[in-house]
Image (tube, rainbow, N blue to C red):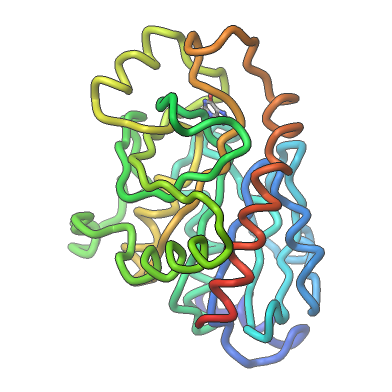
Length: 266
Ligand code: HPA
């Protein structure tokens, strides 16, 4: 039996067999949403082989239960490429999700904005992404399935649903292109200028490997960024992880309203 099938069995034994309709991965400073789900929490440490998210501002557990009457699987935190240098580290959690029968995945992250009209505290939905890191979670995958088309990687139908939910809540949800930098250091102002010329609207240290893995595994996926700062050199401020954690809850409150409305409309 594969590792993911084994862990899916373990999770079903604890949380029941009904497949989650939506998987949700919470980014830095957004972990509290896991507390809103009525259900069973499984600490990552109870899942052998599961990558531990070791970043402060994350909530390292999987919660399976209901939110707005919809069965969801919420990952309170994710491991980042910069923690261990393995871009495929989120493969097992996503394989488990698929094993549980989940078909839709919503990724969230904290990100820096490259656009003056998308300010800290606001949200941006990813219409597309740029893999600036030079890394790929499918390097070493032997099957031809590795040649994943990414033309509509960010699912148009889920995005339309989230856009409608945001509109109904009166919350601005502009779409834009997210650029993945490996981190863990923040970018230089020159890198920020380069990313803008490339056509990026926001940037961060996650999400792109998960989008690639999700598409590889056949999961439909969309992602929303909580903007915590302007890119380096764009504003008169010092960028820090403290700032990310302090500003993220402002955007998280908006994201929660969009998500709840989205689930009501599912
Ligand atoms: N750069 C990279 N990652 C981030 C940023 C940033 O400015 N803000 C939050 N996550």
